[in-house]
Image (cartoon, rainbow, N blue to C red; front, side, top):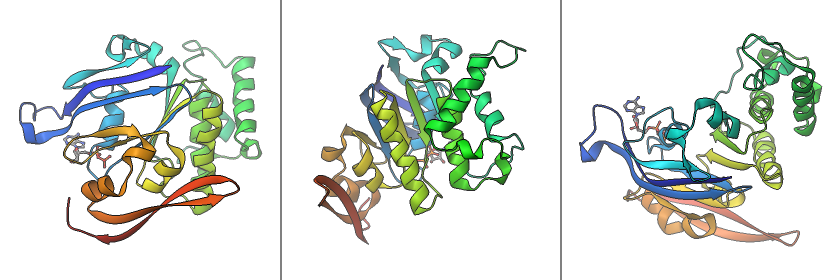
Length: 268
Ligand code: ADP
């Protein structure tokens, strides 16, 4: 799968034509199978709006999004959601469904209207719970799970439909150290299976450590490119108004990047 956004701009309706009210202008990006894209930017810079545009929930003011050369605006809802899955930003589960039932709901695209889940739907739900290491929660009610456990259930629900692209809205926000790592490492596993991931994040460090590509919103112009190139000290200062240093460590033969925020510069 190849996702392409070409000159994508968006202004909330009512603000069209007012140049200052564009949330973002002329975003260009490309993402191939098995690649991870992080979307970074301060609060209110348009990260969630961009995801909603990408998923067709908001109509672009101009530009096109394409999947494998086809404009997503020309795809039926069914066609689009066969390829793409979404993990919303939701920390607390209110659902009294069990984990298994909730994950099975993720197969609704494959189940006929008013139909009941087939054997293969149930098997797919079991399999994804196994793969994500959460089969032990199978019969627990979602509203009895912790934030980290429930986040993994939401990821399982999104993956059970066998998507080519997974879109996650701040998947690691509000989770503890260990659960953040579990969620981020899950994206690595998906990558190995050729599934692409796009995630919004408040953590430049997570982009540096996990994302092949990054899109930075909130600056003069949107910046897209390989993470190692675009997530640099200059862009971080320009967009966040924070002087930070990026360093590298060697761990078990691997180079790992880290970023340490030093002080607020006021430049923004
Ligand atoms: P982020 O996810 O980076 O925090 P958002 O995409 O939520 O940013 O918001 C970007 C900007 O769009 C903000 O200034 C926000 O106030 C504005 N905004 C969000 N939703 C709406 C809406 N429905 N109508 C008008 N403006 C909105």
